[in-house]
Image 1 (tube, helix red, strand yellow):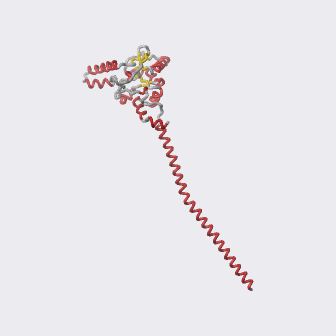
Image 2: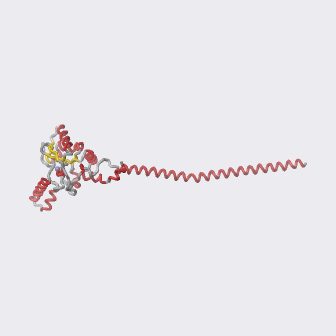
Image 3: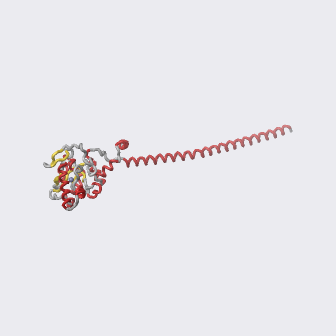
Length: 277
Ligand SMILES: [Zn+2]
């Protein structure tokens, strides 16, 4: 009887121990589950914020790339290059400007740095069966004054007062000191078959060829008719200015006159440009 009682007690104790162990296991599993869920909840937002940052960084880098691309100069020129000397109503030829002249086509003189390019261009035109001739090249300041005064006289004869006559003349003949012919970097070229400086010049084969091909030799049509608001020169489709092949090509491709091209280059100061290349 005592033995049966002892067995009963032992069974009860054993069962209780089993229940306690099971409760403990359930408790441990619950805590573990809670812990893992909690950990995941904390990590999720962290991972999201990392992703946003990565996304931000990527976008920023792309934006910077685009900006660098936009700010990058497409040419290797600087506005201080001799080929890009800007001479117009607002920009006089510097007082200390020195020109070394070279004779070309027997009766003309140009800056010696442009002579071979000019000859090459004229030779190629002639090979194409055309007859270009230079009708004006380097002019001394005295010659420019004479031409300018002659033009003023023409307007005076038409009844304009002195100031108005000077203003009107300046649209056709550059004011002395502001004309490109005084730099030796410009020439007027016409067809031997049509030498009158009027609006029909643009229709000659020589002008058509020059407008299409002069950039290959570094020359730019200096006063395109549709740019007269900027150049302040009315009409001179025979006037070609040496600017160098790279510059002339860019100007032609982008439909820019020299003033516009120089404005384009101005946006790249030396330091900024060095950083980007
Ligand atoms: Zn000219």
